[in-house]
Image (cartoon, rainbow, N blue to C red; front, side):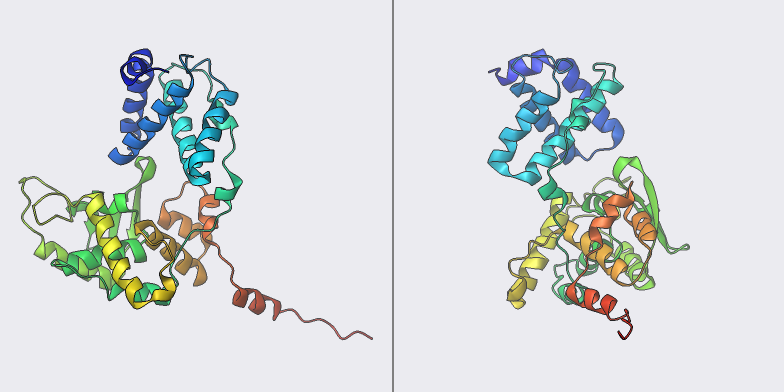
Length: 305
């Protein structure tokens, strides 16, 4: 088995190409680190074989070992990393084909419904948003829960992205794509208040909308910690939800579910979420027993003679 230094030396061009490709594609720094780590683990499994010579069997062999240890979700995350790795190699003409695209995602993970809060529970959770900078914290929570922003999109939000005259925000999302999202009046007013209360940044030219008490752009981890603290306090008051795994991304799930429950066209929900494919949006189309009963109540069976 290659040690870390030998691995870096053997695959130096491939790993460098992958790093450049991810930066160019706009991947977050945390995703870049995780995907690079997965790529190194995959290359380690090749035992000296070139990445270009490896095929579908090698990818599956690596993923099977990953799945046995960590489960379907991690296995699929690894597959996404390897697909991106080969996409980078093809882009830089270091490989001619992507064997990872021939490997299917785990069905267990694909069919798993996302966790989300019902609309009334989402409202209740807002009362537990606290902290020294409560307006800022509430605005962050509302952007995720009522505008569907990803945690990275909240982190990257700049002053110029809030268009108060238009009542919208411009979001820089996945795939380096911009998405303009209308903001409810209540939230837009709160964003104006947050901007007035904004701490003077450490750097004079800092454009971040959300600034930490140290005068730096609020980090993804700080935003996640805010959500964790809020949900921890919320669950203490609502023990029936104690087993629900809530996070920043679950607020986005809750937003999507709320829109679809309110009859919003799925194509509009797709655009608001910034999804590339409507298939991704469709995982939020939950159907409960009451909805099934309501649907069946519309059917009139004729009297049989």
